[in-house]
Image 1 (tube, rainbow, N blue to C red):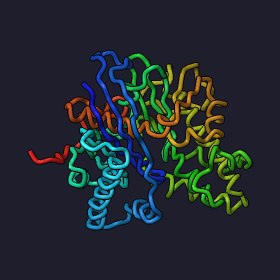
Image 2: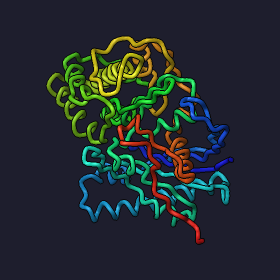
Image 3: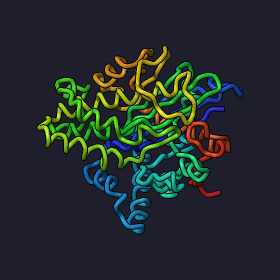
Length: 383
């Protein structure tokens, strides 16, 4: 059966909302993990850049009162619905879209207390578009004691076979392992959210290709402090809240810039090295010889394997080169459409699996008590 779905993803980097119209086709039914059972095509896609006002409102959402947050939740849902309507109009997709799957924008994530919250009311999206919607994709897993993250690995398993490791370089970097019957994943470290904030010090929205970082000098003291953050010593499964990058990491970097007169390029160079170091450490934990719940050893070159790199950071050539330098694996950056819209594509698949009442979040990844069918369904049309 073929499904034509719109997937919506808003990441922690706050650059915009990704909208992808995709075709998903079940190809075969198999119980063996890692084998491909779904085909896909990204037919149309675009990133709707946030205005300065929306960036500020989304970034400031954790500080709102409960009433203000819920008002923003409803308003942002209507905003997403309007963006989808404009997307449908632009690409002539009227009466073609069967389902919308929306991740929303994470503003709270506290799995230790079994709570996660994404802005973007699914009911508001369904009301605006008159199309059925799946939203609140992480809530069930968190309620079952899981981290609620990463949730993308189900898509990597079903859509993108043939790799040992999957690295997504978004606002937060996360890594997944697929090998035989093992599928494990966790958040690695803050990534683009920090790099983009540092690039703005030079009047740039982001460090294109890593060109600024490449000219900077490494600050060993800052790098040592970053690598010593307590999160990195925790066993997996584990996940990061968005505010770790903005409230913990960025103040550390800015203090070092003040204390030792580091330039923005120096800070970018050092933080790029930090991301590469933590990716190397994460890969070492996941590849053969590592077991769930172990604490990390010192990073070193890992055994041979294949890694697929996607997300906005995959366009950062300097960052990808630093990762390649540290890892004895084949690092592949795919075509641009998949780099930029993999997460929106996977949200579409998660929505279809929810609609079919099939598991769409993996407990082996999140640490939940079981695999689960995550997502709230909102019917956009009258019965």
